Length: 498
Image 1 (cartoon, rainbow, N blue to C red):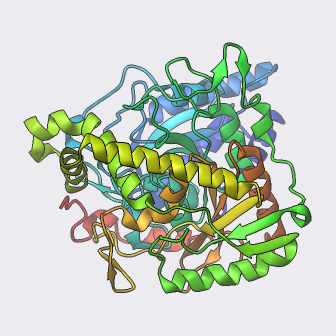
Image 2 (image 1 turned 90 degrees about the horizontal axis):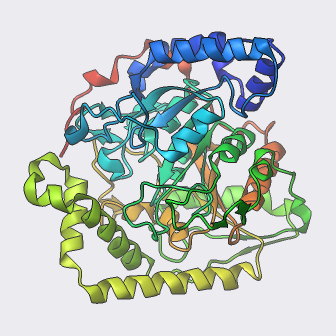
């Protein structure tokens, strides 16, 4: 079923500029793929065909007129449903916003549109992005493209699955406890959490908190870098967008557009199965050890090591709960029945903490950050599994145990991701073959402070090194099987909230 919509974004831009294809033709291919496969996985939940067709025709006319165009000119792009899109329904997976149609794009979406992207639909997410399993009471569950009855992870699960199925060449996501990286790992695509402030955001409830960031998702590293080059910018509304007027301290956008090959033979690689605390299942540890053995000969040095992340569980829980209390405390008091179990759990947790708890969490986060700086003085890059376990059924609200050991919370199983969220270092998940269950295995690559270009370069080099290795390259779902499958909406519990 390989078609135009399966082509890489960088190549599509070349074909568009050469007038070998048209934006209208490309949009039609994406819409056809959605028609064929979306019912099986429920990744795209809102479409704007009339608006998208008008934008595609306008993009085609601009190409025929000649001249310079934006970096994403003519490319169809899907947007996570927790990100505001002008004139296009944005529900956040919540019944409170079931019919919400924003008047304006949020900043990161506006930058994509200004670069010529054709925003044509929204992708599914857990309610208010709360949780690592993409389900909500508005649109139901999203299924894994390799087994629709299994989880797509979250919270950018819809975007990851849409990309894996070829519904669009690019899609947006966001990440607090791994919401860009975890679904990328489960769907066999690429998701990058950039350094905080690189992609400015005016939407964070706590402007000085580094926990949440928007980011790019694609099927390969070059496409991810292309999208990042557009999303990266300054915005005075974001206090963490570390720039001076007209002087971007993190470098100009073109720095991110095309990753330079990394000289692997000069790099010191560190690897960890669990950062010293993440409840990683044995099956994932075995696959990871196999991947490390294959990677080690490429590097100057390869050793098992991790920054000191002690206290990370407590720090992340407290800081995350504070964010949810700020965002949802009022609705919890006035309309608790309109909030799902994950959001309620976070608000209640936030209400139980004291200022002393917050002070302890903030101090622990700072200590972990400084531990990372010491660590990267002796190592160039760090890798780990992306996620602690192989995909389980989406009917499970969250994994209550891993290898028979109870988890501490509904997000404890995301610890491999938030071990990196806390210090704010850039990280990317790239597909690295399959796990023992035959499902995608994601490799998380973590770079030094501000090392987004380093992360992209290394990821691109590893992707290229194993591109022809059937056991290590990106797995592709069986699209014909998905096209013939029963609609996911017919599955028991599809719309169940609790």
